[in-house]
Each structure stands twice: as structure tokens, then as C-alpha cells.
Length: 277
Image (cartoon, rainbow, N blue to C red; front, side, top):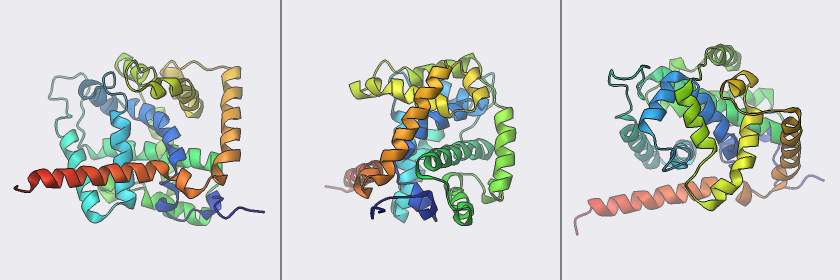
């Protein structure tokens, strides 16, 4: 008998039915490495981020932004847009880098949004089953929010899922991993600072990240892989698919709820600092 809280891919009709799943955090490593493999993103991150000192900072920022634009109030959406805008403002090459980049570049924002959509759908369907084709298009169109909430014009988001797949395949074929982005990826996957639980979880995170990557990009990053690693990855995904869909919503959505609480607390604290005593 199906338990009342069991989620299946066929239940998903909008981005809000999927984006709150804590499971999707496991796709974060894949999305970030794919972002880094675009030189415009990778060199911007390498020259303006501090993965070594703050290994979770980019992930926290991305998760807060995603949860706010999907589940937040208009004021919360406006807040995260301002925060992201401030963080992006200094991220440009300034004419001194070997690679041109600007965090406000709509084409780079399209690629970041694309990696988040593709990674989320790939992982979700692996665990919960395929999204009903009748609703997959709506979920895809909803994901345009990831870019259009910043500077990406709506018309830049490929028109439909089939168009996205053509864009995606072509973009993956043109990714370039160099020594700079390979070093950043290594720092991301082998943190030397941060909480103990992060370092303890990294062997599993590395396995899931490497196992879910396009093989060509995995090889370019120099991520080790073998028949044994593939078996371990498949085993982890089978166990995840057997357990996660049957968890109650309060557990499946614990990250969403926690990030939104933290965002709201930060907004209250910020408002207090602006209010004259």
C-alpha cells in the first residue's frame, strides 16, 4: 500500500513540487563542477571566491537564492536578488585575466541556471522516478526563474525541453577544464577547513559527484573512476531510491525550511540595524 507521504516523479507538476526536496543538495557538486568547466564561470570563481577558507559559502548562497525565489515572499525574493547582485558586482575580469568574464553576463547566468536544472532533474528522476511528460515541460519552464530573477532575459532560456537538450549537449561539448578550474574543483572536493561533518561526508560527496558527471567532463577534471566506483555509486543510488521517497515531508524538506528560517532571521536583523533606536 502506498504511504500517504510517498512522492513519485509523476506527482510533480511545478518547480515547487520538486525544488524543496533536500535530496537535491546531493546534486550540488555536479552543478558546481559543470559551472566551473565554463571558463567564464570557472575563472570568475577562481579569482573572486574563497573555497579554501569558506568551502560552503557558494553552496549556502546558491541554496538560499533557490529556496527564496521558489518559495519566498516578494520581499524575500527582492532581498536575495540584492544580496546576489552585491556579490556579483565585483566579479568581472577587469581586463587583467586570460579569460573574459562578468557575473552579470546573461549567457553565463544561463549556463549556471542550466546546470542547476539539469542536475536537479537528473537526480530527482533517478530517485523518485520519471516526471510525467505532461508536467515535465511546466517544471522546465518554471526553472527559467533561476536566471530571470537576475539579469538573464526570458527569451534566452531555451524554448522547450527539446531545445534545452540541444543547447545542453552543445554546451557540454564545448566545456574547457584548465589548470585553474581543476585546482578550484580539487579545493571544493577536498576541503581542509570547515566543520568536521563536511570533511567526513566528502568521500560520499565525491563518489556521487563523479558518478553523476558526464564522463568526458569527469575525465577532464581528473576525477578517478573505475568499475568498482561505478558499482558503489549504483548501490548508493539504489539505497537512496528505496528510502528517500518514503520519508515524511518534514524530513524531505528540512533544508528548505532551515534555509528559509535563516534568511528570514537575517532580514529581521538587517531591518533592526536600519531602524533608528
